[in-house]
Length: 340
Image 1 (tube, rainbow, N blue to C red):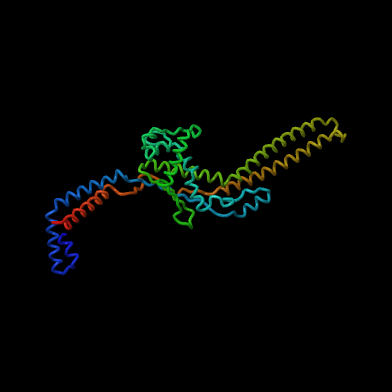
Image 2 (cartoon, rainbow, N blue to C red):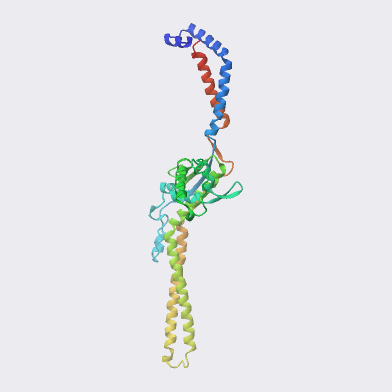
């Protein structure tokens, strides 16, 4: 048992403390070479942490999405028989549900199948990410390449894409609302390749917001297409009535005979009906277009991921310092507690 351990067991007086300090300094001075070597070795081992856990980059995109209930304009449209549902009808994708939409399988896989210009080449994001995954590092699956179109996938491609989706949602993609009271959403992608982090952030946001807008305005766009088709039909009928009315006027031989003007009166009535129908449908179409614009939520990109990206993880000198401290501590422990 070392002297230091013995003193700890029986208690330390002031005189013992002075002697202990002198003894410890003498032991440390005697073993300074060993301590220095252990500190250097620890530093080198610490640098090895860069290989096991390399520094990563965080690409952040902050978006603001308009939320809210419907207002008075829906009542105006309802008077004309138009129901566009209002902003975010039924409360779909409201609050946290919109945040969760970013991490769904459909959104992640759809974004991974996007192409990006990386390292001087246009490449699918899934093919760029694949070598960084455990399956890409496996010799059995290392040579797998994903085709450009999902229709060309094999069962192996489908299975691997599902696994990569889990890899993305568990360790790469992080979506959250920084403040529950605000309509702000942070989309973070953390990866050791800064180019992939930036490209995937932009892809997942673009795909998710496109799907969000399509879903929110689907009913209003459907009503709009129906009204456009009805307007085109009404315009065709009005044109036909104009031609028929002109022909009826041309066919009147003697305007003194009322029986000869029956076709003229009938064509005129048809023209008036067709014109009124066309005007009414055009009015409803204009209101529907206004409703669609009002129903489409405002989405504002507050912050984009631009280089240089924020680094996450330890710097090389931090790994070196940590390893050196651990090595030094181990050397000091050996010097003080090692049996003489």
